[in-house]
Amino acid sequence: MLPVVRRFVLGPAIAVAVAAVPLLFDVHAASAATASVRVSGKLSVRTGAANWHRQTRQLKNGNKVNIVCKVTGQYVRGKVRRTAQWNRLALGDYISHAYVSGNPNLPTCAAVDAAKAATPVQTVVSQPWSVVEPNGSMTTAQFIAASVPGAQQSQREHRVPASVTIAQAILESGWGKSALAHFDKNYFGMKCFTQGVYANGCKTHSTAECTPAGACFTTNASFRTYASVVNSFRDHGALLATNSRYARAFNYTTNANQFAAEIHAAGYATDPQYTTKLVNIMAKYNLYQYDLR
Image (cartoon, rainbow, N blue to C red; front, top):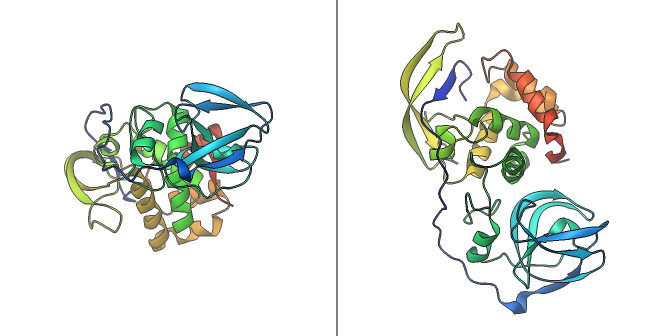
């Protein structure tokens, strides 16, 4: 995002189509592993890799399960661990790995399995970090859950707190409803002065830009396009990590609120309420829980 202007890309948001991707090799039954679940109460088994999918049955603490393969889905804080991994069982349904005792060496599910696990509004199985990508058709809870893997990947690579990345994605893309987010998977308004290492191209959009003095005008600008939302998140992290103007913020990588204030002060946005808006989003949805420690 440019530090001196605010941009509003013009264009409607429409339903996201299912992505067409090549199938991977199938996983054979011989690859299955037996494990037990650890829960307080009962564990719901679901038709897909997220808690918003339909429940098929319930498991009690200590029940044995036959796991065939793993996929990436909703991030869950469970009895055993915190993880975005979900396991496909022999019957074809799924449980969160957050409740599985032990850590069996599981193969990654074939693309046909991952597609079944994903939410119907969008299926992306070509990226290793996230089966379900955030998009404008999701509920707020779904959007946040789908954003966690990409934000955490950006934090691993570039040290930007995941909570800040998710909050900025929410604010900059309007919960994934902006034209840039829908058409180009560009969640942070990244312009295409150069393509960079994460983008896969550039596209011109009609956009409204405003100077710090408040004078706004319509113009055409070139924006980066991405093959995946994860790469948009990673590119955002790379911008903050490599631009010297934001260097001070990286003294506060364990203090998300201060990190947000520092990038704002360094010129990330001209909106005088930008820090307040980010902090309010982080607090309202407890995004701090997704920061890696």
